[in-house]
View (spheres, rainbow, N blue to C red):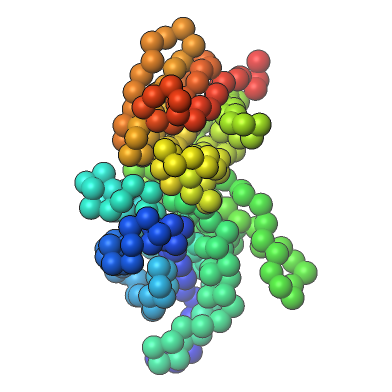
Length: 298
């Protein structure tokens, strides 16, 4: 059917797939990319969506409304994370997703228009395992909960004066919270902040930036260029007011909290308290980051 209708456009792009091809070779990498795209497609179809096209390592989809688009995006991340845990996908393989709700033009089996262009741009701004949407798309949700989203700046488009405000949906497969049928991670706005340092680089984790990725991959928030470090070695997340180290690596991590015995983590989680050192590898020569937790209110 031809015409113009309101729809939610979703682009899901595999992060840093070029590194995957370099490390695994064309044949193995292509198989893994195909599996990940298949999982993404299943998630979209289950949420009443249609796959318009698959372009290399990216899938382009259309869904009836913003809520369906957000559910599909979360389900993509959950499915891929589960596949990694079951060793059906390599550690570090994951999507970045952009969703935009607005009018699209339909002609035969083609979908085009400004909403499609904008969704593509939004997805290109997302980082590993992020879900970005425009502020207008957020307002199109049936029951938006402000505490489960955070503003992440604005996007300037070529030929336009006005900016497009962007919002991140804070999600986690570890959540125990359900909002309008969508699972999210609850963000605690209690003023605590964790600072990570590595060779002069400083990164912070707080309620305003609740996820930090560390690894060799160029898309990580903190890049550590060492062959012992995995492309996505670990994540630091603020979960229910606590900071958690989530190792996703092949070589593991050693967490040395001040005043406590060292603790190893290999594809597992560990709470972070106070301050200390984390080795990104199994021995003392591995790259080391320092961390410290501060109370911004006190």
